[in-house]
Image (tube, rainbow, N blue to C red; front, side):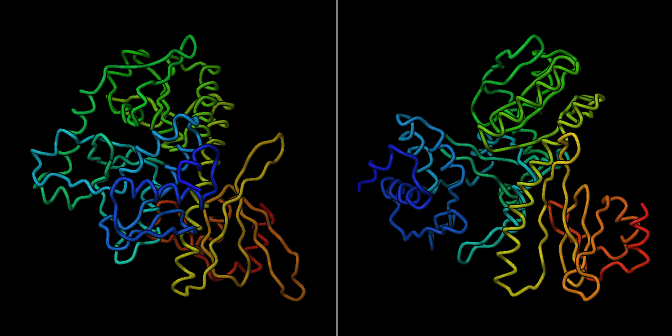
Length: 402
């Protein structure tokens, strides 16, 4: 079977890896390559990058029409070609742009499996943006976007603040506003250049489209959504559009709403209960995805180094009136890393006379009663709490009385 024969149906991950490696050869990559199925990436021993992750490549390929798949392959094949960043800041600064990414992006870089000889990237030129999002610097070319770390800025002899200011000016100089109207008060960005979400950093642009008091969402890298009103129905529709964008476009950025205070985008807390609940549910689904990725990375790491600790799962459950809440489990006698969830189920496992005993409690009540038994693990983008000793009967009785 030739590589072109695979373009006319959705390939399995294994067959898609063949497409990716074939594209790399077409682009002139001559080094060794192997498919890491567990982490869905191509390993390239000896190459500077060390590995190419296939998740976005595969998503875009499967979403494209048959006629468009060749263009997707041509675009992503550039990942296998090394493009040197200029030695001087003067030569590089015109291609700097600000990008927004989930905190899980940093988590994957820090905890992810490494190519042979590589080191985890923990030095990105990062600024905090919101609860679930960070701002980074990218060096953008026609074919590739490379996230920069502080060591590159040090080589250029430029501060992070200066580089971010220039990147913001470059973003402002890109194409003028491009929005489509979704309703009387609703708008969606339409640049489709992967910097749509970054334009939340340009309040003047947003105000020209949606007035002085807009509500903004940036669900994906390629989509910014605006509401010119704080009306309940408009905000409910805004969340629906955000949910749809995440499901269809991928590359999630943020599940929060934002408003502008003194020219800066800050989280907006909707006053309407239904809007707030729908927004919270959107965040819970995103957290489930991010915690699952974190658990997978930690399980793989602990298996490799022999660490005996249980990484608990962040689960979603439907309760009364179809409301979603998150839950995890804490089992006696098991050292574990607990995610932060709405509720937690404590219980015994295989202890004579105690089998089947369970306590389903709110997270806040658990922390109040047994917080001294929980230690916040350092260095995780998504919080985890290490537990070793199980609550005694007095604490469990108090929790049962809540």
